[in-house]
Amino acid sequence: MSLLPLHEPLKALLGNNLCAVVAFGSYTRPEDATPLSELNVLILVRRRVPPDVRGLISEVLGPQVSTLVLDVESFKRLAEEGEYLAHEVLRSGRVLYSEREFDEILKVDPPVNERTKQYLRRHALACIALSLENLLAGRPLWSVNYAYKALRSAARYYSSASGKLPFSDDEVFESIVNQADAATAFVRVKEARRRGAHVLELLDLLSDVYNASLKLLGLHSVDWGGVLQKLKGCYVASVSLEEERGALHLSASGVDTEKRPFEMRIELCRAQTPWRT
Image 1: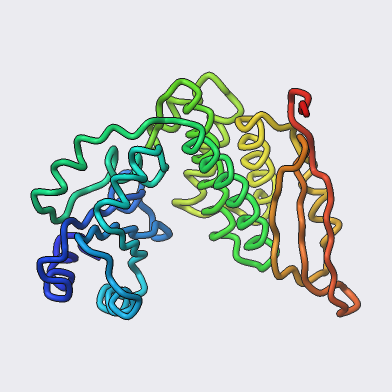
Image 2: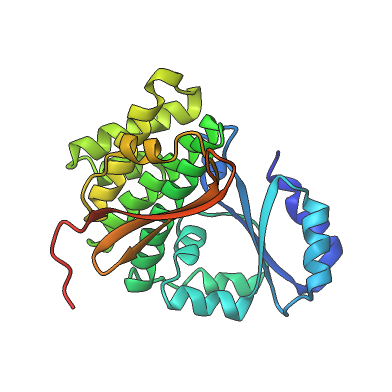
């Protein structure tokens, strides 16, 4: 999908309420984009739009475009508070359309703070969970895609300690080049995301990527083969990862081998440094 005409139907729909249209994410970087890349678009408006108009926006742009509609003041506030979205948009986004007000927003320098870091940490763990979910559902390409996103967010979290955020794949690699296992895993999962992975190599790849992500987050490694063995033969509807008192837990639910609903929660690992009350 071409990025250039995206603002035209929005201008027709929103009129002078439209302030800016910014595309962001790997789709906007040809060297990083794959068929699995999502087209993320931030639509900035002067005045908030009602839900029915938001629905029309999604309908006009189509299902291939993931849209976020924010009013200018709300986005500016998020940027000043260090929200990760603002970093992504202002530091690596591609402006497709803008009015004068957006020039002022471009002057905002979002801080890399605890809010930024905690978003990246949660996102990395959420993507590991989604990768597992897709693996168990028989969707290996999507499993690899979410594993890639997990390691990318973990690398950004790791780099945030120095006040920097890498965006492109090359920048992500450079940010973890001193962590050999993580850097190697990133190269492998990036290639698998682009070209696919052999089924016999998939579990080893995913395990290495998951554990590289956990290491960058300051957590210990996990025996992922053992985790998957506990779920063997089950229909797994959902998987989530949560941190609690210095430990990482996995929760899963679905239908077991005897066709009965099940819920399970297991401790996967603990932090590399002791958790303090």
